[in-house]
Amino acid sequence: MNEEGQGEERRGRGGRGGGGFRRPRGCEFCRAKTDIVDYKDTSLLRRYITERGKMEPRRKASTCARHQRAVAQAVKRARHLALLPYTAEHVRVSGIHLGRR
Image (tube, rainbow, N blue to C red):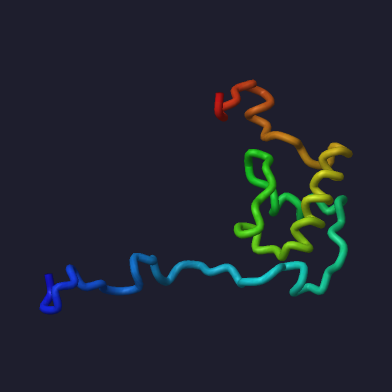
């Protein structure tokens, strides 16, 4: 305990690591002033899909709500036209589903 009786004193920034790569904040589409997300641009859409084939959440993809809805719609259209997969390759081949039972 320290002199004021408040336990151990805190040091640093509360446990955060420092000095790593930092992604610029804000929606990528808003910064580029893009209104339409093209479902045919699979290289762009793959950035918003995990390696398991799931769509990234807003907090991870750093998109605004409006453009996240547009990305979700574009991903669904691209999946329907077989431009993007619904699932990851190893899940389709092995048939193993490691989710909840």
